[in-house]
Every structure is written in structure tokens, then in C-alpha cells.
Image (cartoon, rainbow, N blue to C red; front, side, top):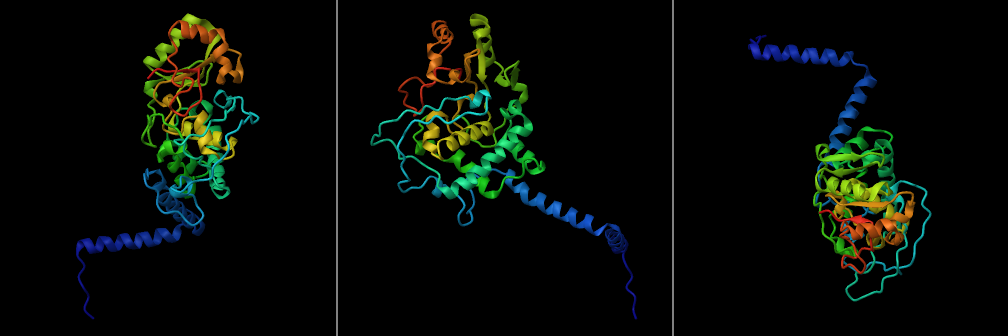
Length: 331
């Protein structure tokens, strides 16, 4: 029998392989399996953090771009008044949903309404966002980014990773043309992964909200100086994630009618809160600060007289949004 003479490299590789074999056998079987499963899960879920402008084909029964915003005529709904109970007293939830009937016109697109099957995925995604908000806190949730949200969801059992169908639905809500819903405002944030740099913002004491440094902060400081403590900040910066959550929460309150939701809240990516605007109200006025009742207060009249209010969404505005006298236009 002829023995082959090993080179130095082959000899070292042989020693390394025997060492690996020995070490693997020393690892507890359950520990090894768990480690392998963890690595597989990490490789699988890491793909969710990459932005997909065009979602891949979904499984049968899952929502798709075509199913949520069909080219065919979707189900139409009669616009009516909604006044759901509001249990959450956080300022962003304290909105009086008095959605007035809008006369139909040839230019008005039919309402887009989630089907019962789509509501299953929609509700699970909304519940996950709600758990994320609870985990990071209301204040931090105002400025959290999408990539950071995905990381929290993947690594925190209290939240749980987003499913593929949930991710597809959220991306669809963000990327679909809002004109489909009857909303004609500008899209001010065009990427789902847009983030807010902490060095560019400042937290307003006793409000739970943030404002951008510069024009936004200076405007709010002047308002407080001229009007006093009777004016409070009711909503500041809203990240893409926060606006997605608010929009989905609004849609749920109006029975899955995305068009009605867009009438009282800008669709994801279209809110000027993401780039500088903010809301103010009268101290102690509660949820009425988010209704036309605010326009009858002395604070509102003084804001007008002093030239602070350039209303973003005035009465009979062409954007498909209700009248918002509390919204301070900065950008």
C-alpha cells in the first residue's frame, strides 16, 4: 500500500476538520439544534428589513396590491357620520370622527373598503403595531423608523415578527397612489425606510411630543411667548411608522373604509408632521382641540390675529381632507 505524502496545507486542514468533529460532538444536542434553528430564523427574517417596492407574489387569500386597490370598481360605501367611542386618551387618538357626508361627483373615486379576508391581515398588523407602541412608549413611537421597528419586532417576544402578508399590506398602503382613496395632497416622504435623526429634534417638556429644531421649534416658542400657557402642543413629529399606525387605526374605526380614513387623516407618507408641521390646542380642551370647536376659541382667534396660522387644510380644500384649524403650517 502506497502512502501519499501530505502537504503542509492538507495536513493543517485535516487537523482542523478533526477538531471541528470533536467539538461538535461535545455540544449538547438540544443546544446545537436550537443554535441551528436560530441561525435559520435570522437568515429568513433578515430579508424583511430590505425595502420591497414591488411586493412578491403572495399566497392564495393574502392581500395584494391588486386586491386592496383593484383596477375594477371596488365596493362603494355611503358616506355617513361616525362617532366611535375613544378609550385611549393619548392626544393623537383624541379625534372626533365626525366625518361629514360628501356629495358624489364624477371625479370622486369609489370608496376602497377592505374585504373580510383582508381585515384579518389588517387587524393582525395593526395589533402588532399597537404592541410595538406599548413596548417603546408613546413618545418614542412618534419618531421610530421602519427598520428599527422591524428589528424590535423580530427580537422582542412581546411584539413578534411581522408576517409576510402583514409586510406586504403595510408596503401596499404606503406605496399605492393616494389619489385612489380620494386624497390629493403631496407625498412628502417617499421611502418607507426614512428615519428621523435624533440630533435634528427636540422633545417638548410635558407633551410627549418632539419638534424639529429650527423653524418648527422657533414657531412654537413664539406662539407660547405671545399666547402664554393656554396653548399646548397636541401633536408634533410623526414618523412614517406612526402615521401608518394612525391611518390603520382610523380605518379600523370606520369599518375598513380606507377612503373615509383618508378624509380625516393623511395616508402614510403624506403627513406634513413628518417634515415640520405640528398641531396646537387649548389647554384643558381635550378632544375638542381636534374638532371645529377649536376654531371658536380665543386661542384660535389670537393665532389668526397674530399671523401664526396659515392653515394647511382650510374649509373646502382641494386635497380631500377635512377642515383642520388646529394644524400649524411650517413647511
